[in-house]
Length: 341
Image (tube, rainbow, N blue to C red; front, side, top):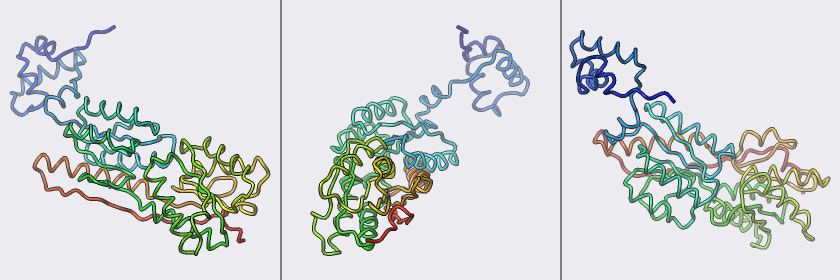
């Protein structure tokens, strides 16, 4: 294995001190032109590449922002990452994207990794409903912003969507189409997003004079297509089957759609279907999917901008006040819910 070239090797080859090499790299204007040329020639000849990570650790300033999401297999979080990366790049930073896979244990490991790497700051969509992982991470003094989650009981910044309003949009649309019994294919009950969308669904039913019994919940352990197919199979087995289905995200809805299609159940004629997130695949499904759109790219960009503002404030460049930004969702109606009862 080839041995890496260090700053001492460059100094030896150029016949100067290590300090002079450091000045050529970091403050070239302070070094005389002939000496600078000799050092640059040695750097080029030896193939020296400075250790950016070591330099950042010495300065206490990383050029990396951490992003920890629930599921990088979900296009929604890919869009969040796109928005964050765009804002970070404009500030000269990179983004380290990690996937907790909805696991509190994996979330804790990645937060520890971010602390070890001394990243500039972290954007995180929490997987741990207890908040213990976030509380432990707070002790490191690294700024963070919650994404797709309201910062309840904390002083940190957050950027989220009003999921109660989103759940109400979905079910109000179904009620207006004549449905009086709705299945809610949810995800892990510990996720705030899942709970808030359920509250919104119940609110819409109550507005129509329907009690909580009009909502049949089918919980899932995960928020993916496979979990949606399983929920679809359970839905088909119900003796008193609802006429409409609201899913906590589009991946679940696509899985439900697959299960219904395989069983010969027509959407929307036999069952209306509404998802959440409005990922790109929603419009391209075999039956284009009605969905509650979240501005994912905007969410990621705003979260990154808040984080950058906070880190600049810590460095004395500007002031910063913690904010809770709540964006509004939008219902996008497509064929999957258009058959009236």
